[in-house]
Image (tube, rainbow, N blue to C red; front, side, top):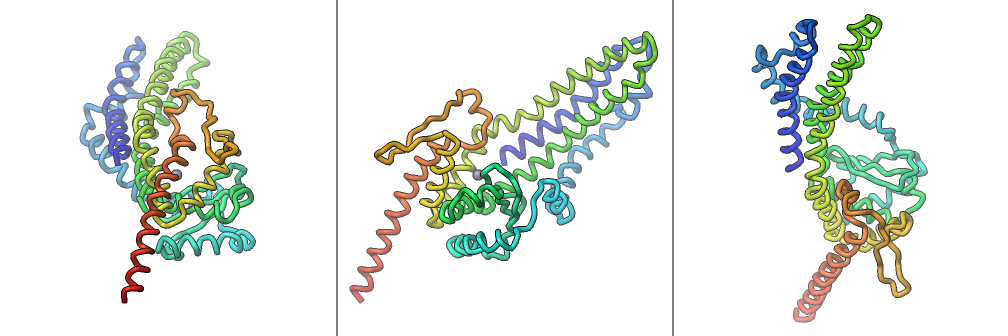
Amino acid sequence: MLQVILTYIVNVIIVFVFFPILESAVQMVHPFSWDWLMKPLHLADKLEVYIVLAMALPVIVAIGFFLPPFRWLSHVLNGERKPTTAESGYIEPIMKELCERSGVSRNSLVLRMRSDNDINAFASGINHITVHTRALQILDERQLVGVLAHELGHLRHRDTIYLTITYAMNRLGQLILNLVILLNVALNVFMIIPILNILVRILQLVFLAMIAAVKYVLLIPQYITYYFDSRRREYAADAYAVSIGLGRELRDGLVYLGILSAEIAVLDNGQVCDCERRGFFSRFFITHPKTINRIHRLDEGIEVYELKRGLKASREAGNSANS
Ligand SMILES: [Zn+2]
């Protein structure tokens, strides 16, 4: 939610601040009149248009993202496809177990495949889980059901819905960014005219500086929320896997993936240790928490879960012995 609000604020600010700056920047390049260029974008004349645009566009785009035609298109663009018969044969029993454990109906989930050499699976939209082909080859059934439980956690916590809305909010700023990029390229037409081409070059430099600035400003909400929100969501999705009794499976999957990516190592005594060589600052922009931290939290969660299960089982055994 934090990310949605921050993204919206940043995008609206860009709309309101960007055009006046753009206008004064363009006006600096005398003696030519740039009115023909700036007139259609003139903010003072069309304040209400911008207010309506700032309010309506993200909402329209956000709704659009959940509608079937757009969803279908984004899946196609992402290279997602229906599983083949062989893939279904392998993964459907795993999905069945996942649904039984979680109480989620199989019909309410859509499973997609993507031919990709990254060992990955991800959740998207309202009810989509996509598995990379490589994950299917590398992970065993138990590890895969654990990883899918984590992805189901994202869907159950509505993380993917917030992400989609955030993406939609960002379209507003991106639209303006693309507009200026396009404008900048279009100015190349004047390059053949002597003297004018020098002025146009100066203008293009101003545009380039603006493009760079807007790009960074648009990333601010991501930077802020990556550190706090995204990692919290990852831990919460892990906790969900534990809560439906698939914590050990997810842990095994994470350990296996951690070893493959050289982020962790397992000592002879079975203890897991950290070998990640990333500095504090490069870690700052990574959505997922450190693998070692996730494993430690999973261990704690699994311990509590199994303790509770044990207590419940012994209480039930006591009850049936009494009756
Ligand atoms: Zn995740």
